[in-house]
Image 1 (cartoon, rainbow, N blue to C red):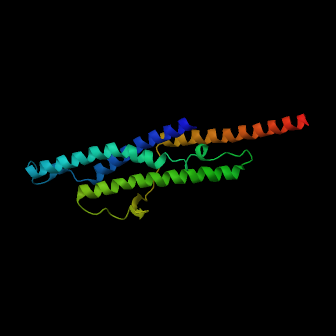
Image 2 (cartoon, rainbow, N blue to C red; image 1 turned 90 degrees about the vertical axis):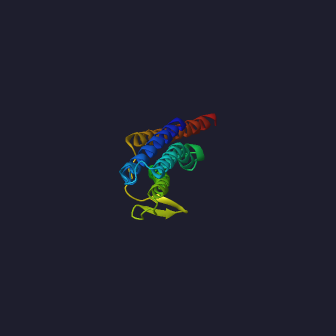
Image 3 (tube, rainbow, N blue to C red; image 1 turned 180 degrees about the vertical axis):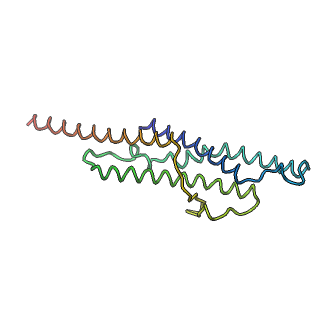
Length: 181
């Protein structure tokens, strides 16, 4: 389960970088089209923009790691799983985990809003961003990549198998105790 957790986080890093770079390409104005292209001012602006993009590309994986590699999201890390957990409770935990991960990814996307604003020299629009816990959060539809979804599905399958094994072990222990009497 830990290996699948790390796979999910790795795919989330790629997903986040690709999403931010795509959004940046859509939202950042190209400098080549500016009327004063080729001037010293334009060259400095391009260099500053390039440095910001490099910094963003190096920071995003750390931000993703910090936001997604939390014990509170990954059930196998933070709880002693009880074998008598109901199917409804398991579904509740899975839904809660997915909502938490989605919320964190939305916060990661919020980092892009600040970068967009810097590159455009204006405040980010409020139609796709909200402030939450002092940080911007992306509020539009967000769909995990196919790789992220597959990884999370594998994690949930292993979680169910772990609970089934836990139940079976408790039954075996119970029978063993009854036999010893």
